[in-house]
Amino acid sequence: MSVKGEHAMAEALYRKAAEAGDHRAVVKLVNWPGIREDRAAMEAVYRTAITAGDVQSWASLAVLRARQGDTAEARVLFTVAIESGSVNALTMYAGFLHNHGEPGELSEAIEHRRRQVAAGDTGSLPILGALLLTVPHRQVEAEALLRQGAALLENRCRCLLAALLLDRGATGEAAELVRRVRATGDDLVRGYAERLAEEYELPS
Image (cartoon, rainbow, N blue to C red):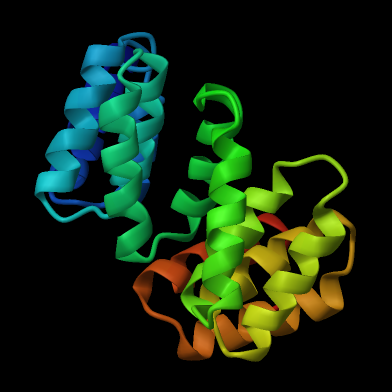
């Protein structure tokens, strides 16, 4: 078989898997030559995967729609992604507000989540931590909040804290957080933890 034929066969296999909701195949496909340069083609891949049940593609589609100028749909998509429990959606939404939000929107979102946490809504700890990570000189506060959530067994906080620790080289503590997520988390948080473990070569 020619190189061109092998390329076409590989694309077809990734497409079939993506259409079945396999997010790893989605990532491969949207970075495939001929697709990665075509935003409409990328959008079609994400929407098809979402229809098949790929929750993680909600946030990816939101980022793409923001780049296409539709920030209104992006906000809706991010809301769905965050409510689904996606860890990636937290950091991607924070980045969206930082790069595409209205003036003052990021600060307002932070203050809103602060009020929720102060009122006892511990479910707001992961998103507040993610938002603060995008703001200069707020990493200490973000880490404190993520540690608070991790102590409450909030696996999204554990994931974000592990990523933060790995960035600074604290692999021992991060590996323990990843181990706990692997043991107790749902598919979404476990998937995030597995990707961290793979990227940083953490013990299994």
